Image (cartoon, rainbow, N blue to C red; front, side):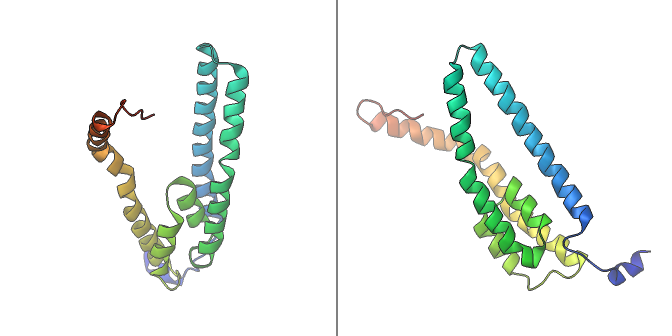
Length: 159
């Protein structure tokens, strides 16, 4: 069976890829809604004004529109080389349009599963550093902020 893998037509926009990506994005959206509801209820429980909470939720929703447009532009930009599912997943979950374009430009055309997987892995490994760097550098950054605060008259407030 495996020796015939090269004879199989590879489709960057295969329905199975849409199912996988859609499932992952639905899972992430479910987490977002879960934590939104919990934090809203917690805000009410600690005595926050319902109008303030509603205004905060509305403003946060409005401020998600610009990044969503950027994601859409990125997906359209990368869809020619990588299909729709991979850029949709990458830019929706973790990724940067500028990085994704550079990483994908290293390949002329993705025409087989091996190239597709290689591009996906390179794009993932390149961005994975951004997930761990804050955890490694947080203490150092915090110490630097405390030093700045000590040197600033009236003790600067960082929030």
